[in-house]
Image (cartoon, rainbow, N blue to C red; front, side, top):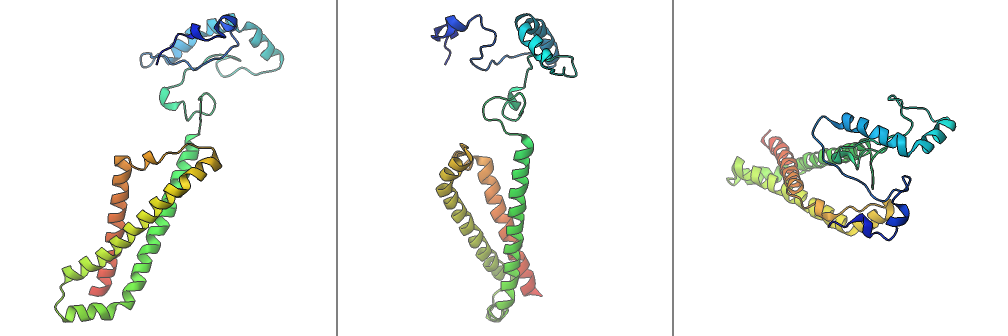
Length: 216
């Protein structure tokens, strides 16, 4: 929706006030000309914010590497939520997000190894059962499908419990951290594919490990 800024009731009072900030401005420029555009903006800033620049210098503000104590910078649209110095709105540093991802993957890896170890431990208690199945004609393929099917059902049940818990806890989690995380991210095709792939691989590896123990 486009609305003329002149329709704002406060426009007349603030139209000549260069200290007034009302909204973010987005511009489309050619690739590789960001620095040139910023240099074109500098005279405008020095002209209309001269008093502010002088005041900042008087207070001892140090110029940046380009010699500016006050200037306007352009930021790529893809970075507005990740640049903690220039970004607008809800800004989060990428390093924080990467840390959360690594912690999540580490927890997932530990859970997968624990599940596989539990499968290995369970295999030793079911050796007799497998021996009986072999004696009555069960083949290698049938035994593998059984142990893999059991592992797959346990993994699938864990995913269902996890999604149910997420659905219940997402609202209080958002309230606690002041976030607005939506469940729609969970149902993105890429996310669903990742979940299905993880269930398949973990259950397959756990089932194959048990099957190898039975074969030995």
